[in-house]
Amino acid sequence: MSPDVDLTVPLPGPHPVRTAFLGLDHRLFEAVAARHWPGGDRVLPRLSRSANHGVLWFAAAAALAASRTPRARRAAVRGLASLGVASLTINTLGKRSVRRPRPVLDPVPLVRQLKRQPITTSFPSGHAASAAAFATGVALESPAWGAAVAPVAAAVAASRVYTGVHFPSDVLAGAALGVGAAFAVRGLVPTRAQLIPPARPVAEVPALSGGEGLVMVANLGSGTSERVRALCDALPLAEVIEAEPADVQGELEKAAGRARVLGVCGGDGTVNAAASVALRHGLPLAVLPGGTLNHFAYDLGVEDVRVLCRALERGEGVRVDVGRFTSGRLNGIFLNTFSLGVYPELVRERERFSHRIGGWPAGVLAAVRVLRADRHPLRAEVGGRTRPLWLLFAGNGTYHRMGLAPGRRLDLADGRLDVRVVHGGSRPALRLLSAAFAGPLTRSPAHAAVRVGRLRLAGVAPGTLLAYDGEVTETEGDVTVEKLPEALTVYRPLT
Image 1 (cartoon, helix red, strand yellow):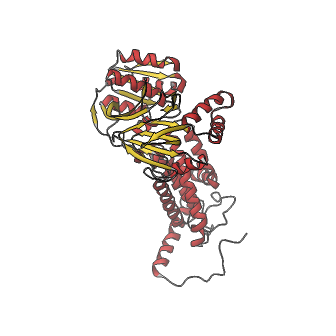
Image 2: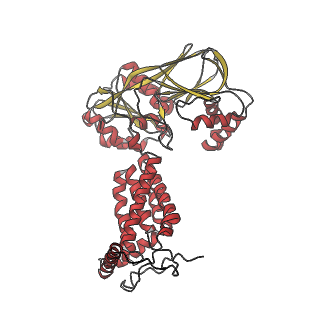
Image 3: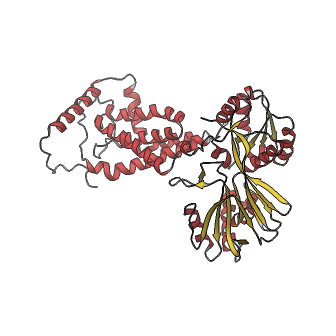
């Protein structure tokens, strides 16, 4: 292993500003070495060692993820991603750009010194960079969790000077680099707060003090018990009904007969059923995410009980678009997506195996079976021409790709269907992947995309599978898809 400090390199010539800065840096280091912090001799060296190789931050990320809240999990992932970028920058550029020797340990009491001294160059501090990157990344996604992590990160950074392995300027430079890494990650993958749609058009909804007038139906099959308990604590006057999946539809209908506001806690399929009931009865809808996928609630900006309760008690809501489809006597609505072709086939295949081998293995097996099938799952007349299609997707609102993040909707009342088509042909997997990575309005021999208010598909064979908000059914022939602009009133905070 080659040394990081080459003692044969000639020292730079005199420079008054640099000399004054380095002198100040040495004096600050010696002042810290001479100062005794109560408890520091016992705690800070241990804390510094625990941050070696990022072990402390991986443990912190695991603790955040164990909280089971979406924001905490995202904060943990963002913190680790920021740490990774900071560490890569330090090891490839930082340590090799300024080859500064470590401080002399003479002024540092022996009890503080680390048992194993680092052998890399001193500038900048990798520990400080990792600590600042992780804490900043967490704070950008969740300020509350960031405030909890920040004192630990600051203590790790301070420990590097206190134990004598870095000068103060090394720590400050490392911390600045770590903060920059976290913001660079945010530029590539925006935080949830950056993707929340505007709170418009504003709707007049009743303010429910203590939740009086709210009837919330929770799908027990979505694992909602914990959130329901939190809702009952926050809104003691609300009526909460926990129902088995088969009973959810009936309970929603009964609840609509006595509610001022209809509430639902569950995944996208459960929310779709509640939205249908709310539309028929002319009721505002309160959505509490509780399933595996909660695209509508998250795109709306409602992630947890706290956010929803604030909107309910303040009487804050908006109107959003609803998608509607008809095929013969079949009709329904969708809040997120409608699709024909590969996706409904994949869902059907997955359901055949999921109870035997589990969800993820069943999904992989289903994808292999569907994509290797020697037939196109869909034929339809589009633009006056009948053609084979691998996939037809219609989103309720325009789906955007923000940096490297997956598609999100920034406007739930734009009056448009986001229609994507993957044409038939060979190599379906390659065609689907190219469509997934393409922009929202690209056109190519493999795929196309348009934004329209209404879509009619002729020549669709009866019995063709159709998926909407994760539910699957069969068409009865030609299909019409259209928008119902600002048809549904939902609660969400306006700020």
